[in-house]
Length: 285
Image (cartoon, rainbow, N blue to C red; front, top):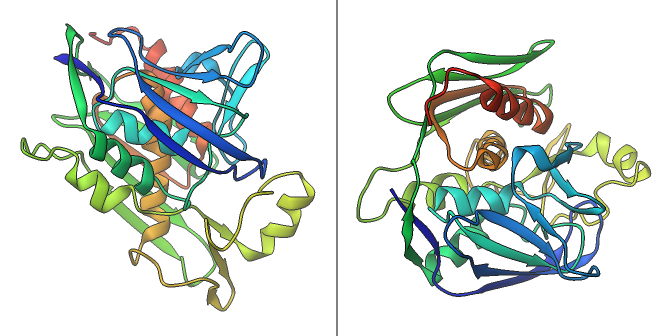
């Protein structure tokens, strides 16, 4: 399978969810074989942070990558968009330590990539990993697993006491439509926004988190329902969890041919599954 990069640069600015810092991101074409990687242009010598599983440093309410002293946080929405939309190689220049949340979803990233288009490169790569046996990661009643399958699919379940969320399930697979292979991601998954629970906000803020969160970039749910409706989908929260899972698994470089099934999982469990997939000895590259 031929590798691809973006046809021209993409520039977006916005506020980081946890840092509250206004940040500029510039995505540039990258050489074949270089992969997807971040460049902290605000730091001396502009250190590079590859978007790989081995670079994950922490997973508290987002995924953070670190190479030496340089780090970049909340990478999952941007990386999901690049990976699903076929961008194998991309240089992501960023002038702070957190990717901007934008509207809380991946819609702006995905639409920006679609707008500039892709360029085929003179290099090939295997387009999938073949999973030979199931891999499970559990924590109490939460789990995430990868099951051998004919096609890649993502299925997620969540369960909250708040009636407005409750128990939700959603299943999605990347489109195999040749004329528009990214259509289903742009329409079904990318627009789903991050969400939070009203009773947790004060604690998270006191913990130094969600400094940049607002009703403009996150859905907030309370005992009486959604504080800032309307939702983009009736089950927008669980669709957003699929977005997070796709972004975390993109750190593998390519998606294994598997059915990924998660229930009440987290960034931490997502990354543990990615690590287990890499460690599994019976994978054919």
